[in-house]
Length: 124
Image 1 (tube, rainbow, N blue to C red):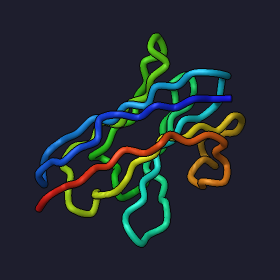
Image 2: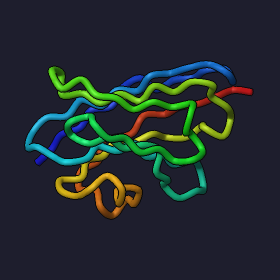
Image 3: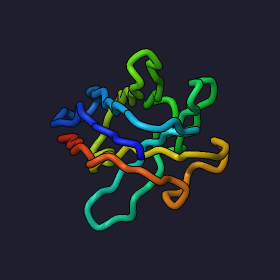
Image 4: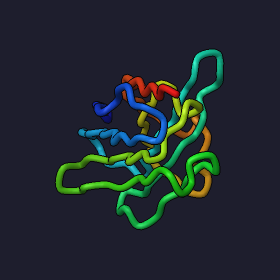
């Protein structure tokens, strides 16, 4: 079992920044990813990072604006979001993939455990 607790969502103006956190506990895993889901849309991949933190992967829509990184001492993964715009408004979820490679970690079905989600709202 893996327990995930997210925090850091909120309301921000367009152009602003937010940092999301996902604290993990339980068994080890290979990949942690962030996904988001806007109203009426499917859940989509945002970013992922390996357990070592050595490799990262980003969706094209957030590349250059978002950064995923981890603090292994705290077993926490962060998503730093800069230059936010209205299209970033969504519920953000962290999730873990127990085994696998980061290159194939953009699909929800590969992830076994999910956090409860945190709302990010960007006002224009």
